[in-house]
Length: 209
Image (cartoon, rainbow, N blue to C red; front, top):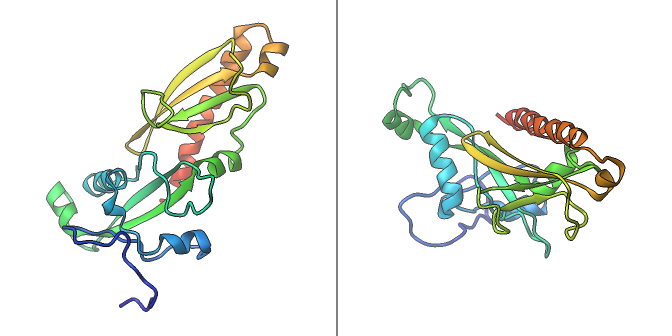
């Protein structure tokens, strides 16, 4: 109906609700692979979408593997959703927002690409970004460390809530830092600066609103 002769619903099947990707730019090979994917078929995506719809606010999803991941080495991903409602209707309560929903405007993020492009990496402080407080391999979103075998002298844990979702960040001193600095003050100052960076990251994500 929208003029795409190659459109195919993914995954196939009969479900009570669908929220399928129709439009995505730029239309490269990765994004072409996403067209037709029913994001409501995935519970992590659906939770974020329902939260965005019910709250009327931007909402980040938990950790997912994006359908754009067509390479052998797949990056962790997340999605930022904004609900899109009908115009000129009341949206004062949950039922009105559910009834007025047309769909979602969203942006997918590949975590390695996002972190590298925003300049988060430093040689002094490493950090691991987790999607859950259990700090497990399954919840790991990004790891900046180059030497996973090194035991850091200093560590700092922080939590950051962005758009209805909470990240858990573990900062640790690198071997370069521990060699050149033998005091905790420098570590705390550097780690605090990186923590502030993630606040600025929320502003970057807000630009997609």
